[in-house]
Image 1 (spheres, each protein chain N blue to C red):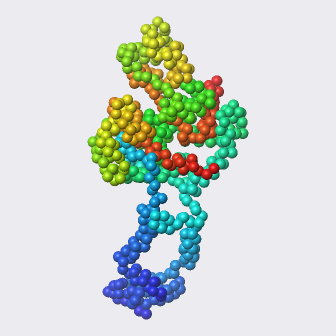
Image 2 (image 1 turned 180 degrees about the horizontal axis):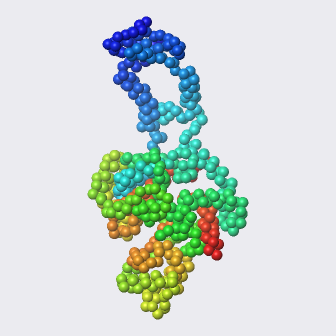
Image 3 (image 1 turned 90 degrees about the horizontal axis):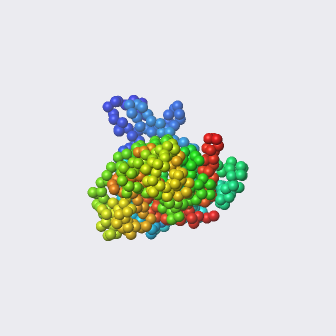
Amino acid sequence: MTTHRSRSVSPDDVDFKDGIQEVDPVTGYDTTGHRWNGIRELNTPFPRLVLVILMLTFIYSVIAWVLLPAWPIGKSYTHGILGLTQEGEAISGFVAIEKTRQSWLSRFDKPDFAALAADKLLLAKAMPAAVRLFEDNCAVCHGQKGTGGPGFPNLADAYWLWSGEPKEIAQTITVGINSTDDDARFAQMPAFDSLSRSDRKKLADYVTALPQGKTSAKDPASALFADNCAPCHGDDATGGLENGAPSLADHSVIYGQDRHTVLTTLAHGRQGVMPAWSNRLSSAEINLLALYVAQLASKQNERTK
Amino acid sequence: MIPIQKLHYNLEKVSMGLVAAIIFAASIGGIVEIAPLFTIKETVEVPEDLRPLAPLELAGRQIYIREGCYACHSQMIRSLSDEIDRYGPYSLAAESAYDHPMLWGSKRTGPDLARVGRKYSDAWHVKHLINPRHVVPTSIMPVYPWLMEELDTSLLSAQVSTLHRLGVPYDTSQLENVKTDVLAQSQPDSDEAEGIAKRYGKDVAVRAFDGNPEKLTEMDAVVAYLQSLGTRTKEPYKILSEKPK
């Protein structure tokens, strides 16, 4: 063995063929025989544990070829004797999720809301799920607490266009309002662009003043109101006809009742859309949500009392 | 020393040879995994009822790509039970058979959009795109108010023809009426609106998506596109309705 080489020798000159393998006295491992300026390289063997695990994975792969879908054969593939698929697993997992829920959710299949609302034990289980359902599906429009916003109804107040009974709420969720569903509730505020601009201005002033109760029957605009608005909003403008037309005598109009907004509404009309949920939610889920939404409103009422 | 070990020792000394050997070894895995997808029939079975995007929706898709929506929103519901529970039936490869390129994405800063069509109202989408904080106070999505500007449709006919050449089954009447259809889909009261249902099916939404039928905006296109997501075939929904009880 050479212990010293001159620096002019390039490392390429010393390789496996020419170099001398020796045993490192400290670790007891072989060296590779490579040498760089006298620095030698250990040829540490691969750890046995890793080799064993690697072999085990090979063995597993052979088992997996037999059990699971594995090898392509032309236009098809080996399906494996277990017949498992990723899709099938997902579906059966989803069925299992539904089954665990079914123990209490099936109670909501029948819309017997009075009995459901009285069952405190059931509600303790169902309401947290209702919160999640509401957040996943309803909150983007109606707000996380159901308080709505400009253009989207507040569900936590006492004002309802289609009644706040859970049964009616469930119907609204199922078919929607002005939605693509064939049975959708229909409501349209038409554009009154056929009226002259000055008439619309008079009407806007009249409607803006309604919530304050500062209008009088002698006002010439009240005749305009009776002709154009009263059929839907009611003679006294308090709505409540369950045709989607809100009361104009309180502050429940979702678009706002300032002069500018009313003028916009008169000129262009309004036709807000609530999508139908019958394709996304089961009827039990819809009934659960209806009860939750109805309770949102009654909770608010208790607070204001 | 066994011969294979010796081969390896020698290979390690020829760096370009080692690179070639690594590429060869790694490509075996790739070929075994990817190549069969082109031959196995089950991989992509295009449903009969899958329709191509209507011109306005296609324009919306171009804007979706332009604004980089795919960077934060995936359009692929994975075949996992929790995904089905949250979003609906998992996505089929065939659902994006007419998408060039597909927009599956892999990163979800926002929610998956594969089934968002018809979930929210047009008015909500408009409000949300102009400023997401108007409707979702905690949202971190950027604002896109410039979508209210006019839609540039000058390239649309060429884009539809390109897709046709790539194998998307646009028929002659669809190809000829791109300019009419792109306008008509946002003008429900126009005479041309009926043509949309005739050419693309009655399920296609024909509405003034941004609330104003007078002006064709990028907002019309994007909302039309979003409302079409997950609605172009009923095939995925069959999987859930046929599930074992």
